[in-house]
Image (cartoon, rainbow, N blue to C red; front, side, top):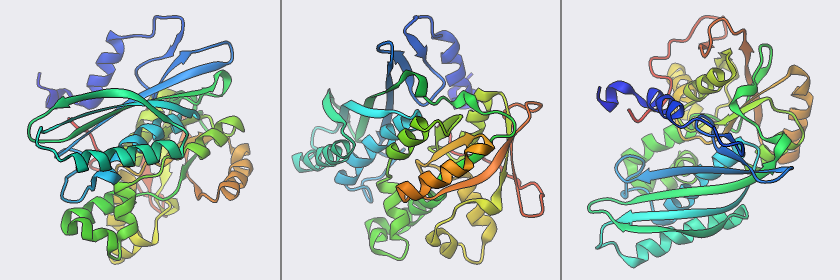
Amino acid sequence: MHLKELGEERLIKDLGKRFPSKKPNLIKSIGDDCCVVRASAKKVLLATTDILIEGVHFKKAYAAPYLLGRKSISISLSDIAAMGGRPSFCLVSIAMPEDTLKSYIDELYRGIKDRSSEFGCRVAGGNTARLPGRVMIGTTVFGTADKGRVVFRSGAKPGHKIFVTGTLGDSALGLKILGKYGEKALKGPFGKAALKHLDPVPRIKAGVKLSSKGLVSAMIDVSDGLMLDLKRLCESSGVSAVVEAERLPLSGELTGFFYSRPKMRTALALTGGEDYELLFTAPKQASKGILGLSRELGLKITEIGSIAGAGNIAKVRAIDSRGAAIVVKRPGFAHF
């Protein structure tokens, strides 16, 4: 069987079975946003890793090295946020052609330093290698959390409400605009969407607050698309979910771009990847606290649906204002 036939989800499940959590200090291994290791009686260590590859995740034509450096750290910081953790330090590895200009590398690491420093995450090491024809950046971020406050994907229960931070679909719109106009898109009418794709902001503060206040039952970051990531959360929790499309938080840019095509903007909000917002569930009684946290952080947090019973595990449905099902052909991005 070829990898494209196996698929990314089955590959990860197979690896999870091959490498189960057998060590007593390994609380969680494969299958969540981070692995979780017991560090002390009260603290745990979180670890996550990501990779950005030219031609797969970005193109030099529109991804300036400074913003690329920021994004390479941000996507891993987003995983730490999804567990309710605080970042501590990171490792950065690069592989690129031997004729790469030093100025390009300097800008890349300037972006890495600025973004990691913003969240108190020190660069502690890494690796370098020659890679003909393309650039690759690998990041591994470590964080900490209170042992009893780590948020997993597996805590959602029937009746819990589904929430998301920020707005959805902007990064996918940004990629579309960047592909057409290149770096000029940043100065155009949809520049904010382009910037969200190139320089996403990890929701560390929101993740920590949601965790420390005990407001959240399960959480994941929206990296591959709302419907696909919600499916992953539901599978871990053994539940199903319903998303009310009319409640999806949309930016003015997304609404404006698809002004005459409302179905297109809904589809992009449901399935577009790389928004790096937090998608989480919470008991109904936590809604007031979540609304207060939204005001405290100055961050939009929207209720978009609810967790249903466990009859159809991992089934995620989107419905319109009349309650009719919205057909989603592809729930999000998968490499294979």
